[in-house]
Image (cartoon, rainbow, N blue to C red; front, side, top):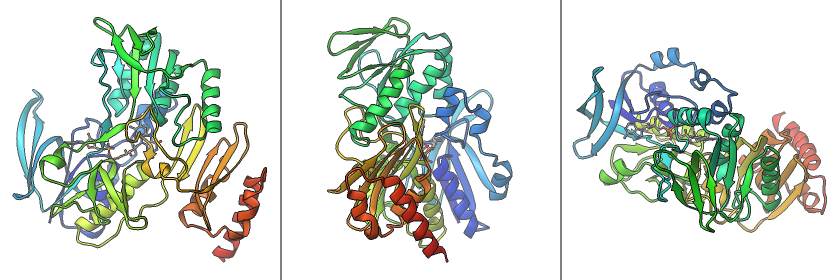
Length: 444
Ligand SMILES: Cc1cc2nc3c(=O)[nH]c(=O)nc-3n(C[C@H](O)[C@H](O)[C@H](O)COP(=O)(O)OP(=O)(O)OC[C@H]3O[C@@H](n4cnc5c(N)ncnc54)[C@H](O)[C@@H]3O)c2cc1C
């Protein structure tokens, strides 16, 4: 069996591990165009702030990779020919970097090509000094600009926009942050949570501009200013944007694969074309529990999807069962866990979804909300009929792991439901006590 995997991200590597766990003989080829191969993309935020050196972005996997026995081809896949079970790729041949077209055949193919930043299309967006954060080279470009830049304007929303804000602040750059609406991340956070984040940003010296829409980036050779819809002009040397991501669909579309917002796959991560699978940020995965196909841009689902795809490519029948999506991240320096369904609607600052985001978070049905802690230690619970549907924890993270488990396993909360819904109830204590009892009963 000849397996080919396009993409050296977490989904691609998880697929290689899964294939090797059940097929010791098959030939595995991994193709990737990122010159740095496999590394932690969520870690880029900490690389930007200087908390993590770039070496630590790379997991210690040299030995593990050797044991997996796969061929690595550095290059860019340009075309898939499903009927011929073949693909074409461009390799940088030899040190002269002249490009060569190579043809590679496969029995089973995985597309794990990820997503890219949604482009900023206003006039001037092509000027040097305009940056995004997709990969390590982008992070290095931001750091290089920050060395000589004095003022930056950040456009966009979700986690990545704040990661860029924090990275630039840590490098001594003055930051203006533009929000199109009246608060930050309004379809995931509630008003109070947005306020906590905004307050912290202001305390750190960030200048927030509400109802601010960028219409033009000005400059001759480099960025010199950004113009807003209301006519204001902010002088700056860096413009960074994080206005959402888009799955890389061009290979799939030209090969005739069914796509919607991502590549459509069934619960076995198979596309509609025989012997072609998809996983990770590029896949819109079917969830048999809800009957919906959703996009995530999260590390853990990408790894789980890659694993399921790999096992199925090797002839097994393993369903990908979507777990309640969660992210433990930092918003304006405040550790925040987001689990399950917590919000709904549109965020004007983001097109589609952002990095570290899940469509599931914004599918809140009619449900009851309980919250406590109105300073930096804040907890919000989304209470369903019998189980918790979602949670946001800011600051104190003691309940992060228990709540992940309670939401994922749909633990019956009937005995505490009324108590949780009582006004001003100490919901953290109620959950903590219930969790201790529940675990004692279910682990014996
Ligand atoms: C700045 C940042 C912050 C993030 N924060 C979080 C977070 O807090 N929590 C969280 O859970 N997730 C976070 N994520 C998202 C998470 O990293 C992704 O969901 C995950 O990396 C997706 O993995 P993947 O394997 O699907 O794609 P990727 O990691 O994007 O890998 C795809 C690979 O395919 C290669 N490729 C694409 N097209 C081709 C082609 N035609 N030919 C050859 N190679 C190709 C690309 O170069 C790339 O190496 C963040 C991501 C970024 C960038």
